[in-house]
Image (cartoon, rainbow, N blue to C red; front, side, top):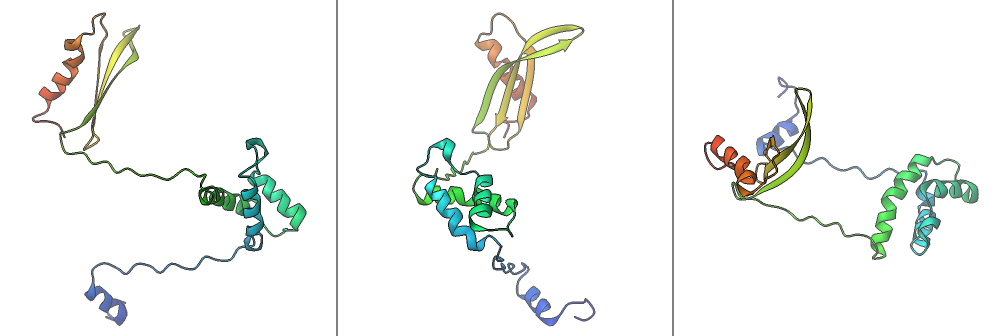
Amino acid sequence: MRKYGVGHPTAQQALESAWPQPRKKLPPRATRLDPFKSLVDDMLRADLNAPRKQRHTAKRIFDRLIDEHQADGISYGIVRAYVAVRRGEIRAEAGRGSAEVFVPQSHRPGQDAEVDFGDVTVHLAGQTLVCSLFSLRLSYSGKAVHRVFLRTTDLGQWRTLRPVRRIMRSSASVPV
């Protein structure tokens, strides 16, 4: 072990598991804002019932701490960061915050795709042409295919599906 520059406990841990142990989280350090956090929270709670234009900004809270509570050792950045986090937490505690929702999406290969059409302006041989843009995005892989084709007055179903037919022909199998 001395040959490789590691101690016995490190070698023992490596033999027990190929994955390293998770790092221990350090306790949060005390800040100069700690004695004033309850005052900031009270200001933010009072803002819950205040009209929108009369709510405290982080700058106003900082100024009030300096003027009314002699908090000379704190910086605006500390107050701003604390207010940014705490404002949402206080709204959620009061039942007024928006719920954070995550809806996982799962797509099977070759099953779903998103298709969109749009107009694009193209400068070609000194002329400005308005063309149609076809976009196809495969939901499973996220691959996208875009085709631009000249616009005609008749964009019937055949003209609309022509780019899809080209894409299917160009791939060896159903795209994923």
